[in-house]
Length: 486
Figure 1 (cartoon, one colour):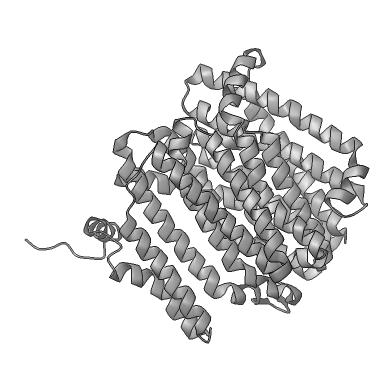
Figure 2 (figure 1 turned 60 degrees about the vertical axis):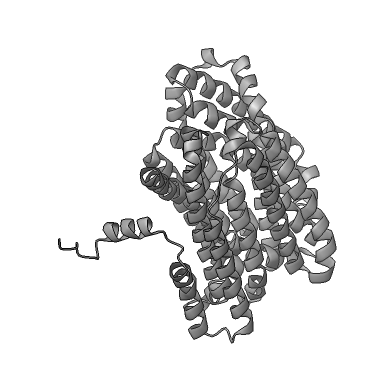
């Protein structure tokens, strides 16, 4: 068990870092956006990113998940067949999407972005098409355990986006258009760089309709599930836009970005988790391993949530000369961060329930759980936004993720029942609840925040969270205790 957990931890660090690097650019640019753009302008940027995220899911139409599954479990010849079939499919649909957006940009721009500047939606359309194409090699890097290539692509994405955003927004004063133009240029470069990789692995003669159908049989339910998942991110922004204004959307989106720091960690873990459990299988001997990983992941996510809860106000007010990390007008956005980040904690637990669904090819349950989550999100948003504004939207998001987790937990308990370490889980929940309660009734000064931060690990340790065997492993690993004399 120890060997498998160390292997998963290593891959989580590697591929998680790559995923975080690919997404962290939006966080690194927040000081620029929140100090340069008005909330209305940032509202347009946030809607553009939401559209890109949503359409990325649609344009993968579940074929990416199916390709990963088949590629990991196939021999070399079959890998070529599956990769060639999938890549041709992605190429046709991506180019077609870009062409459609080009011809209908004047129609879509005011509807999707709330602006008549159709240059913006044109860039968004081709960014989506290009991102789909260069994301497929990234998926194969994970399947082939090639972390170096994965990290290099992620670094190019981050560094290039940062430099071009600074150049276009600060130097050339190109505004929102400069933000999207920088994304388009980097996506184009990354697609061009992947061409040699694709050339070495593709064989157009082996592209097969039957292989494509085989993948789509498993992958197609991921399309509606992905759409429903993105609806959970789309719904709050667009309902806020309809019930309030772009200013509120801008404030809310800046706070949502901070809460999504938790999502980055969760998805970074999932980058390693999915190929890990696909290789492990669903034999009963692996169930204790999955239960142990669940406890460790929940404990880590709980600690990160505590840190965000306690310190997010201080983080956004950090000063760099005369500029704060967040522009002062965006400081109220921190109110929603605990709710958003808690929602993503439950999304992480939701992902932990997927081994049985994948191995038994019951992907329809993923679509069903996310459909219920999306519908509940819309209902909660319509009820809570008129009462609580942006904070109501954040609560709605959190509640929807909890509902998704509960549904998938019940499904997995039937498909692939696991005896979870409930004693540990209860300790984590109790500790998070106590810290939250003490934080909201305390003076919230630095002393109390430091004490509450340290309370989390010490509370778990002192209540027996770690087993004796784990303590021995930790002692041996860090080598701080001298060997006992015989």
